[in-house]
Each structure stands twice: as structure tokens, then as C-alpha cells.
Length: 77
Image (cartoon, rainbow, N blue to C red; front, side, top):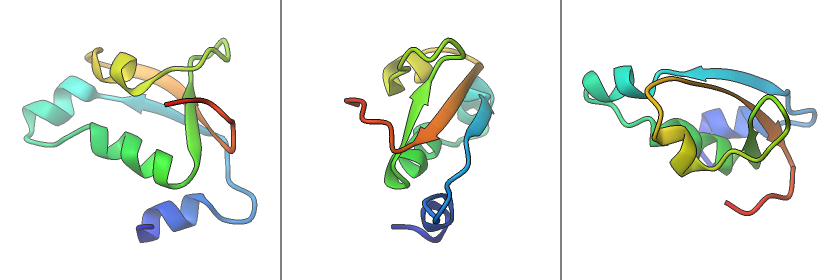
């Protein structure tokens, strides 16, 4: 587990509200999937604002996406 993932997975992991600029990250040579991998390493699952599970492919298909990351939810990736 990376140090950042370890911090997210602490005793009381926070609810995380994210605005991920997928297109902007890619335009600058980055990989937005690394953000999602960090969340998964820390046992976070991603959801739309209406509590519907939001999977990686749906997130990465959008130029910009806002979503919630919740620790410990039992959702299939």
C-alpha cells in the first residue's frame, strides 16, 4: 500500500468528494486511472451523487466527473 493510500485507509477514513478532470490530466501526460487505483488500494468504492455505484470505465469515459468515494462499501469493481 502506498503512503497516500495508507493515510486514506486510517482508523476513520473520510468520505471523499472528488472532481476528476480526466481530459485535463491526460492532456498533461498523466493517467487519471492512478487516482482510482489509489482509492481502490485504500478500500474506497466510487459512487454517483445518487449513491449508484460508479465504475472505473464510466469515470474514465468522461472529460470531467464529480463523484463520491466511500471506504468499505462492498461493490464489485
